[in-house]
Amino acid sequence: MKIGIVLFASILGFHQIAFAQFSWQTLNAPVGVDAILNGIDNGNIVGSYYDGSNGNPLVRSFLYNSNNWIYLDAPGAHYTDAKAISGTKIVGAYRTGDYTIGQQQHHGFIYENGTWTTLSENGAEAYGIDGNNIVGSNGSSFLYNGSTYDFFNSPYNSGPYSGSGATGISGTTIVGYARGSSPENGYIKTGSNYSLLQMPGAYITQPQDIQGNLIVGYVYMDNTYTSPKGFLYDGSNWTLLEMPGATSTRANGIDGNTIVGDYVDSNGGTNGFVLTIPEPSALSLLAIGLGRLVMIRRRRS
Image (cartoon, rainbow, N blue to C red):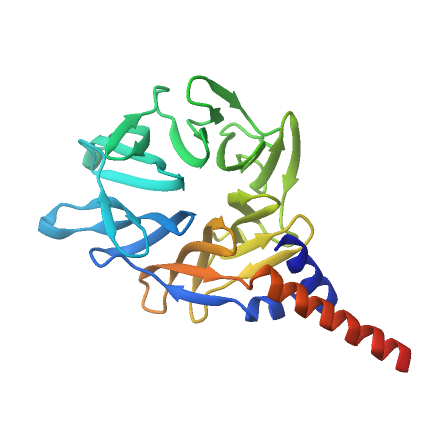
């Protein structure tokens, strides 16, 4: 898939043409409003929604397995946000305490087969998972391997309120954001090596997930922090992802040829989306066909 996308985009010269081949689907939980899809693994999707029933505003989470909706509420929490999934493990963040007076406690969690486990590091929220490795933030980025924490900060941080968060992991590569830099940008970390992740022309680049060499996230084009646009980055090429008819789009998770995220519609409602990109074989065949066409045209000229 990675090679196909690169060839397809480079031969045509327009990422928008590849984008036009994508298939978009709205996916909202049948309860609540303002659905956000955060992560996907093997067809299983996790996310959150807002539940204002009975006058009790709650952020609640779900696991959707293509057939059933399973609703998740961390014990004692008024806010549960499932961020990512790997196999049977779901990770995310939950909050306890009185949010009406600003006295909230932040926690990270692991949920597996009905069992909730709070991350032992105080205030550490989990944002991404690959196998047994979990990444997240407590003001600094961290990698948790099930027994120990490795805290680190991107070298691109700056300013008095600098910090960072790790949002996705694939193998030994981690992506995240550098808070306090100007403009705020993403980073890619492999071992002890860092590289800056910044989409040309964007004011802020926020990576959310990584699979192999493919990174998804969203960007703000100026300092108004409005109307984010999703992106897919393959290590060389940037493709903007914008749900047709939406006023903003955020890409949050990727698995195989499927991307999940959320968008704001023309009525101001937040909805989840599932975006299917062309299968690798289809892209490869199209790229080969276009390549031959280019060669034929060159010969004729």
